[in-house]
Image 1: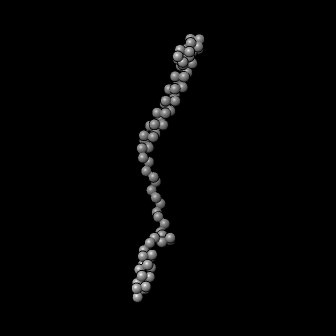
Image 2: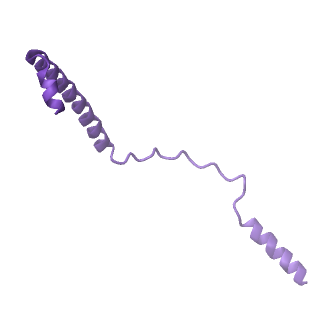
Image 3: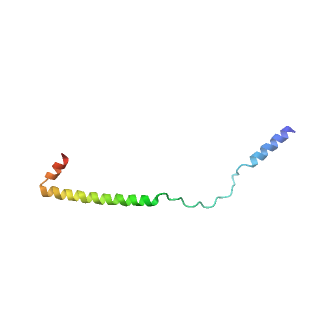
Length: 77
């Protein structure tokens, strides 16, 4: 009788678990984009920084040419 109860309890416990053929889950909602606005602003700031760096390099080259190369030597000191 005890063996029967033990086997019956094991069968009931194993039946309560998840089955392999569970219902397919509905389509998950798209992932939440955390701090998307801040990322966009950061990308814009990087683009502006690159543009400013190019302008500064161009200005430095003009100054170097006008001074005969002395500006570059002074900047390296």
